[in-house]
Length: 239
Image (cartoon, rainbow, N blue to C red):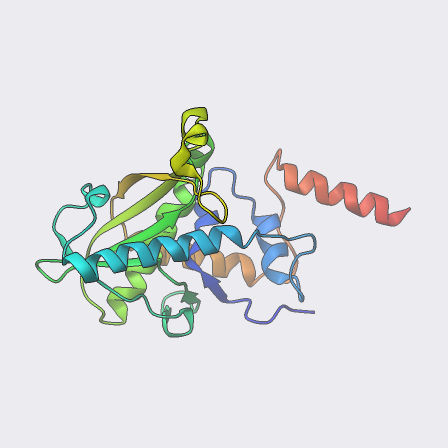
């Protein structure tokens, strides 16, 4: 059985191909599973915080007609555009035959009317996050490619915007952390500017297409832990 929309891929999923640890065997299985993968749980709190961050930023622009001070690492932005719903933010790539989709968190507008595509991350910027940078950079470049091909504007910059929870003992002990109905947590912001490399996206789409066209899963990457786990599950099921 072949999964529906096998040749449709989001910018984030495409980013997996940029990782040094990318495994074509795991990728083929993930994309070819007819009903999705089992045991997949993603806490909704992160989506809620990202949505709140967007409302905070847009509200500040609406009230003050300028960017918040904590976005000073993105000089020149003077406004924003409401990001389209994912159902309206996609392209058919003619070179690969893949459909590229996504939903950017932020589309900032500069004085020259060019766009800065941003993605909010609710996480502390640790070594673990650094390892995921290839995924996030590809994701942003994919969004930029979609925006330009849909004639939304020229993209002049890309940015990862980390909202890092402030969880120190001092912050927890502050009376300001308490409200009449609960408590509040502060966030500090770290902005990472990403170099646009839109030309690399089409190559990754073509590579994904070549893998997904295979009738059977290709060989896995040597030392892939997910392949080892899958083999373990199959051994258990065989018993």
